[in-house]
Image (cartoon, rainbow over all chains, first blue to last red; front, side, top):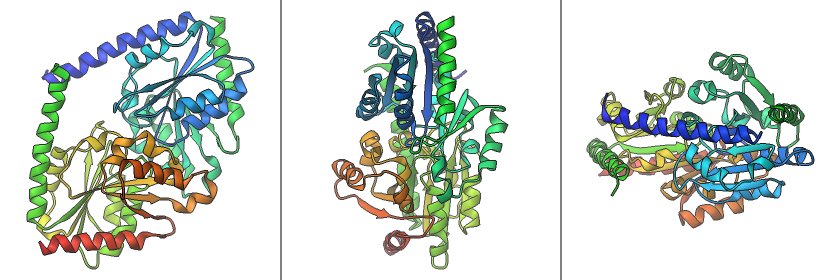
Length: 221
Length: 221
């Protein structure tokens, strides 16, 4: 085993240990949590903006936003009604479990029903780092093109839910939905999928129902 | 200095050394070269498909395509008329100088006037690795949103040319061009910029002229 492999294994082992601690904390507080991943600009923050107003009468929602720089996303999540914590990774291309642990320390978790972690915009690196959240959600968007499952298999393989966003742009873009879905099916058979538009609101109710169901299940435990 | 910093410095030092060798090779063969970077789906391959047919009567063009998996992009570049070499990074989120060196070994460089390196789709990691090419070109696209320069400053700061693609989608997307350009100007004042649509061909002639000018300058040296 060469040094490089050993170092990578040590980093991942330490990360998974902290991820497991994060999960215990989330379970203890009955807070359902998702790790939201996507390309830059696929619509993570827009989906959060669509989601929070529809949940906030019934649930308390916290958002942890990971970005290289700025607090633009956390500001948008806070404006939509969430408790928001910004993590600036300072160049790192993904969130890791330690960063999430630090952010969780700033949130009154027992008061929260849902935690949304908005990862750094990147289809590669975030998929390698467990955070301790319950479910991983990938947002794809029509303008990214129909070949993305084939080109980013690691990301598509590892997620629990897929949201296909910007469906309102279908008339203007050459996107073959059958080809896209065939690629997803090969990598992640039966993957739960919602097709939405954060601009028009189309398809959002199905996503909200899924979230509510999982939040309520977490409460019952 | 801790171990982690030392390791990163060693990796970067080795990379820069190989990048410098790549550059010498490209200079010796009078081949003008660009490192094309972008988010997944911003239009790197589409721009290559638009570019090659307009150059191939006059110039020989080679394309090196970096992807996690598949040869979809190299197949498209070859179909457009280029000599194409695919690099599968096997999970790595960027190309590095060693990967390019290996790809250059498969190309008859003295016969080539232009080398286009299509990096892995990622707005973060590729900006940290010099490859040895003459110019770095970033493709932004309208659907990614107008906040990207603010959120990915490392990428926007380090490039020589910016191409704003998918301008045909402006009527359907809330994208504030002034806000976007203000962010670019702060990070990279006076950055050479082309606004194009790879769907309609709008703006492509300006980009082609820029390329021809630089290819001809490399030949004169």
